[in-house]
Image (cartoon, rainbow, N blue to C red):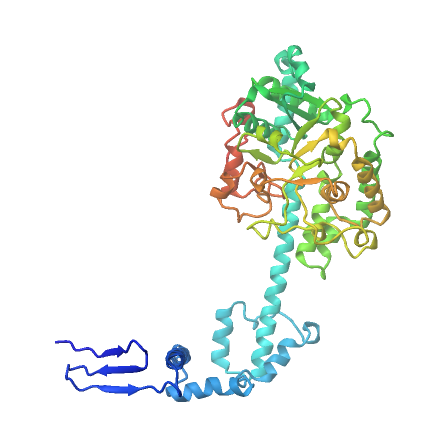
Length: 537
C-alpha cells in the first residue's frame, strides 16, 4: 500500500501540520509567530529554495554533458558560480600564442601552398595527431590551411560571377534562332504581317475604360510569356489591352509572333520605337545620356578582365561591377518607362511590366487601388521575411559617401521595386519627375558614375522620391533570378513573380525548381519553339 505525506495548512495560515506517511496520529506542528515571520515569507522562501535546486541541477548537468570534467556537485557549483559572484571569469585553456598567430596579419606570415599543406580538415587532424606539434606550429598550420582555402573559394566565386555575366549578357542561340525564323515568316507570310490590333479595335488603345498594360522588350519569348500569363489569368480578358514596345530590329519578328499566336479576346498592340515621332535623338535627353554612359563605362570599368583581375575587392563588389557591364543597362528598353506620359498621352493610368515576370492572378484589381495622389504604385523592398531580397534601402543603391547624395536623401529610406508598377499618368504630368530623372543621370555621368553604379532603379528612386505609393507585396515577389531560397509554394501564392537577376528563366543558368513557374506558359509543341530547340529543361 502506498503511503503519502499530508500537508495541512490552517485557514488562518498560522499553523502548518505535517502528517506522517504511515498514517499514525502523531504529527508535527509548526507554529509560526505572526509577529516574527509572515506566511508570505514562508511562501517566498519555498520559491527561492526551488529555484536554487533547479539552478544547481543545470550547472551540474553542464559538466555531465562535457564528459571530460568530473567533479562533485558542490565542487562544480563552487567552480562555476564562484568566479561569477566575484566578478572574474574562468581562465582560458587556449594558449595565448594561438591567438597571437591567428590575429597576426596574413601578409606578415608566409602563406605558400605546398605538398605538405593540408587540403581538408580531415588531413589537418591526421597530421596533427601524427606530429603532435607545439601550439605555435599548430596555429601556423591551421592559419595556412584556412587562408589558402579562403583564396580558392574567392577565386571560384569570382569565376562563377564571370561565367554568369557572360551567360546572361549574350543572346542564347535558341532565342537568336527564334528571331530569325519569325523574321523570315514575316517576309513570306501575309498572316504574319497583320495589323495589331485590327482596325476595328484601334479605338480601344486610347479608351480609359480598358485595363492598359505596357511591356517594353526586345525578347520575343519573354514577351510571349508575359502576354500569355496576363491574359490566361485575367477575369475579363476582353478588357485587357497590352501595348508592346520594341526596337526596330525586333519589330518584324515580334509582330509575326503575336499575329500568328492570337490572344483574343485581349487586344495586343506592337509598336517599335521609331513609330514614335518625338522619340528621336536631339529631343530625348536620355539618348545622349546613354551614349555618354556607354563611353564612361568602357573607360571607367576597364572591361570584365580588369574587374576580375582585381585581387583586393570582395567578390560581391566584383559581381556588382560585372553586372554594370550588362548591355541591358545601356538599352533604351530599360529607360523607356520614364517617357510613359509622352508615349501614351491619352491614357490616365497604366501598369508597366518587365519582360522577366510571370503573372499568376487577375490584375484588374490594381485599378481599384487608391494612389492617394501619388504617381508610382510599387512594392517596397525593405520589409519582408526574406531578408536577402527584402532588405533594400536607398543606401543599397546610392553612394552616400558622395555629398550630392548624402545631402539630399536618407540612406535608411525604404527602396521599392521596378517590374510591376502602377503609374498614374495624370498625376505624373503635374510633376517634374522626368526632368529630375534626366538631371540625375547627367550628374552621375559628371561624377564618373560615382553616385550609383548600375541600372535604372537608382535614378528612379531619386526621380520618384515623394511620389511613391506602397502597395501590398502580394502583387510583386522579387529575387527569383539571383537566389533560389524562394520556395515553390511561396512563389505560387504571389500575384506576380519577378526573375530579376542574372538567372533568367530562358537561360541555362536559371534555377531549375523556379524555372518551371515560367515554362508553364511556353507552348513547347509550337513549330517555331520546336524548330529552335527551345526546351523546358
